[in-house]
Image 1 (cartoon, rainbow, N blue to C red):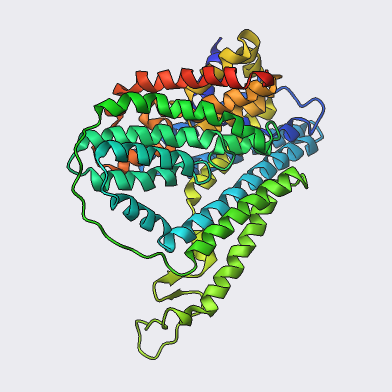
Image 2 (image 1 turned 90 degrees about the vertical axis):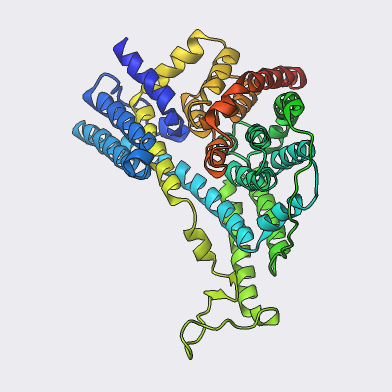
Length: 479
């Protein structure tokens, strides 16, 4: 029981257990069972300590990637050491390589997506959208709905944190004198963002991994559109009556997007089409299409740099007589793509590396098979998937999805869609259950709080179960 207690704690506190790739599990026919070995207990302890250190990041000021990278390295060193002692380290090395390949595909996909978003941010695309929304001169209830609907749609192609912060800036700008509106609108944004990201592989890490593993085809994710829409509309319709009716007074501003902004948006769309196309028709990893799209952005950036004098005179440098450096800032526009890549959230990406490799090691040791038997062996797939979704209110949904994928449960297509839905929207139950909620907690400076979100948890839970019911109704053919 003590061993299962430790395993349960790891699953609840850090269920990135899913990063053991299926290829890793098949790298050797019968890997050693190390669940009762000192390596197994050592690995569990390392991941638990690393995750605790990550949670205490704000208090210790130690970036979360550092303990996770160390833990993953120690786990795999120990595993390979034991296999080497048995005279054959190759199976463990192959398993490590398979997990590494899964991470590289994720990294390249996210890198290209975030590079495009950084380029659009530099070109004032998001600023122009925010100011346009503020200038519409709508009342609080209209703003509540327009921000919710827009973020629901935007989050299907843009990562949830960026989408939520964009709409959060609008809410804070127009509701600075009405804390109640800001709080309710932020709750609505969190729910809408998580719901929008659940029906598209481009909107969330969990759906991206399900797509990359081939469990659900790209077009089949859109069968979750109606359940996700219900998940957003049910709590929004109830919160609507608590929104003040008055109209805020705001100062309208104007801002022009910079040269090439619309073409960058178009190229981002082309990149998404390439990613989907190479996956569906060439059966190559979606990251291959994303990297091809990155090359388009690089060539276009080069074109903008060489033709910048058409609309922007050369900027004067800080030191007279010193020439401008190609690829640096010309006027107010940054054309260097590598500068945009450098601005990615590398601490988070390295944290995911440590999580994927470390917990991939736990999966290779044999713990995930035991957890799968406990979870899916003693409960129906529906009950198990609903409970996993509820646990995403406490733990990142992407890491939980990795856990499920690594368990390899024998469930029908409808259940894969169900767990995609529940993990996508379950994080809305608490403010700390998803990146959008955490981001808005910091952005609103006390107007949107953990407790204000918690008060509406029953309403959000109603939307959670309503979306599950709609899924069983409209997607019955998949069960």
